[in-house]
Image (tube, rainbow, N blue to C red):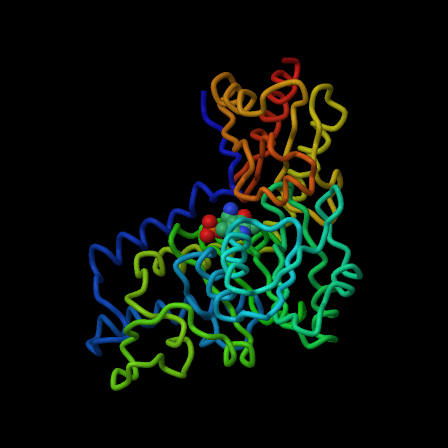
Length: 383
Ligand code: PMP
């Protein structure tokens, strides 16, 4: 029995074939560092780094590759934002659907005097921008929102939130873990000050790399969260003033950079629009399949609009962990059960602490796989 991988919200698999080939090429045949030595191979590797920044700019419509900062992953990017933008006495607004990659640093910051509030979302995980506007305070220095929920796929109205933040002069930042590569995203049109993305989910790259895209004025005010050698401005013991070096200390993840660059080349050739259309087709099929099934409750939006292909199901009367186990054991369906690193989101949806079984789709998911999952859900729901 072939396994059906439905855990794209955790990480995408498989990767486009060129990803592994390019990573192996770097390790086996390139091997050099960048930004330090000036010999030929180092310059060529530097060009791959630049190409990756350019691809990120093309994908997210940012006009300045120096402000596409490469990070060790989305969690790092989010920490860079929170620790770099907030000081004691500052206020931050998040939603009630955030991942612990935001909530854990924020709780730690709160112990040091940073204040924060959660904008309450409804039972579908949706935030009302008008409520967010009312919760802004004179000392609000950051609005940071998960664009798409990793629990139930709800996508927030980032454009409306961006307009409100712009009107109040508050930096608006997006955690696009579940939407980057799944939805077209336009940095300027959304009024963003920062966009944090992981490489390994919808952007189809390897683990251990991500990016933090920054607006120029916001980057100037952001304090580097980590510091170290950059191969530049080596005469000073302070971080260099220029971008992206200021936010990229240490030797970068070059195998990751080579792999991610290849992944983005593939994604750009497919186009995010086609990925989105595929996601919508599969979402319609999944929702149609589970709608009305006895013994199954869908959390989050039961419609195509304002969502991505991440679904949480609750099996009332059954242990959800046992359900996920049976889905794999009996049907080869790979899901994730529990709280998905987002206890706040489950509190909002009313599924804390029992959690849900999450099914999540990606570009390489097929119609047949969705049908197999729906059939298995129907069988397991009978108890
Ligand atoms: N935010 C959200 C909404 C996520 O889904 C995830 C990953 N599950 C993260 C942040 C953290 O991303 P990573 O684990 O790739 O650093």
